[in-house]
Amino acid sequence: MSKHYELTDDMSIPSRWHLRTPIDEHGQKHNPWQFTEGRWLEPQRIIRFPVRPDGVTLDFTLDSFSIPVVHGRVVQLFERMDLQHEVQFIPVQVENHAGPYFILNALSILRCIDDARCTEVRYFKPEDGQPEKVGEYKYLRGMHIDPAKTQGARVFRPWGWTLSLIVSEDLKQALEQEGLTGTRFIEV
Image 1 (cartoon, rainbow, N blue to C red):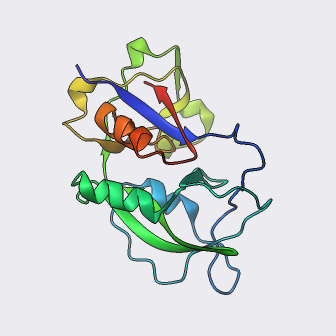
Image 2: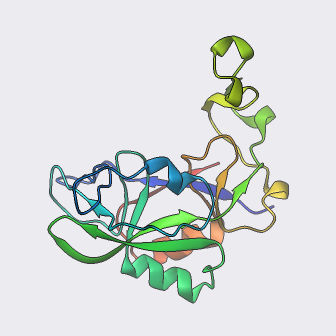
């Protein structure tokens, strides 16, 4: 079976930049959670990312809410791999950086976490006081994906733990071969 990886931000890069919560042209914050819902978005306002502290620019970065922001080089790779149906690239501005930059919006949320193989799993219960979340993941450590439940997807978010961005092994290898900066992969 194919392997999957959580694509995350390489925080070990010295003097790297850090992107903050997205704002519009008036300085009002955008709802960051909309970018984890696995659906096509039609932003009505400019999306701008403040950079604090500034530093080494990266091809792949997670902002302070784990929104993936990518350089146009990533978009070109995804297009070559024919992944346009799995993701949406939303144009954004990054403070004091020409770009082009985009939010990588994964369009699929899949029920694919293999609870039995995870190191630790806790679920929301009625006594947690959040009835809308009962049965969803409250805590997850050592995540494992069941490849049989990924439906051949190469980039997606796992249901119940949508801050994680999961990629297939072939996409991981392509990102590495392209020499894109900022990526870190954790086998799941």
